Image 1 (cartoon, rainbow, N blue to C red):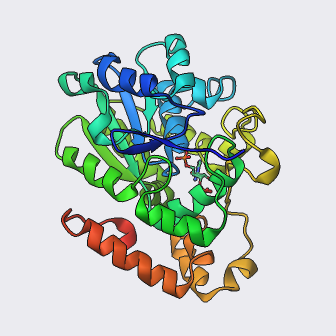
Image 2: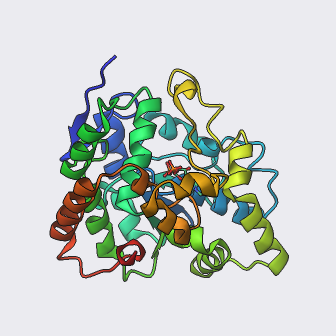
Length: 309
Ligand code: A3P
């Protein structure tokens, strides 16, 4: 079955998860509460990782809640049809998720004291992650080929449209005291330090041992083994689990496999699962990506972690 996206205010959405009404509701009618925290991301940037971290912060590191309630029920997406029906069950203080771009985010946020944690990731890795995810998820367009998807991503012809616009839109908030941004790569490089920074932003105090619990219980391994967080419980109607795994890449890749490709060898500095684009991009694709990136990001005047590698 081929999926056709529709647009809402210039952004692509899938009719399997959204409608004009659900998006209009999210933008114009949804009531943000002062003690809400929103995890906002472009898809595949580490949204669920951040949900797991914030779920664990709520319980001071105790994994019981994470191990008993599906991740999408702990922090529903407030713009999706399903998420909007699940929000009623979320007890405040709510942690809600969203992939909405800045220009169509809930208007009521901007007059509230609520907070946003925006997670960014190297767009090259997002492209690869999204490619595999689109192959599994039935309500998104199934890419014909990596080459075609590569071009679609750069042109913004994918779900949620352009990564560049998403990031540039949200970075307008970067000096707002209720806005905190962090990269997937920082989480990956120093999860403990990242958890400490997130606590500072949220005004949450944790003991050393509780911080350790948050870090250990939100590791890739812990999430991959937790059926409440690894999406294996999601209906086959949405996700074809025979085509892959939501927790796609892990650190158990052997050194020998990494060694096959000299670019990948370099990526050990990324500690394993970041830099997977090097397994997928040709040299020409990488040069083309960099050219588009530089052109589209030139006005932002920000340098991200991945640009130096
Ligand atoms: P890959 O497909 O590159 O493996 P999102 O939650 O925004 O959809 O992002 C999904 C990506 O985050 C996937 O990346 C997934 O493996 C990765 N991810 C999820 N939990 C993680 C964790 N605890 N540690 C590292 N990566 C994680």
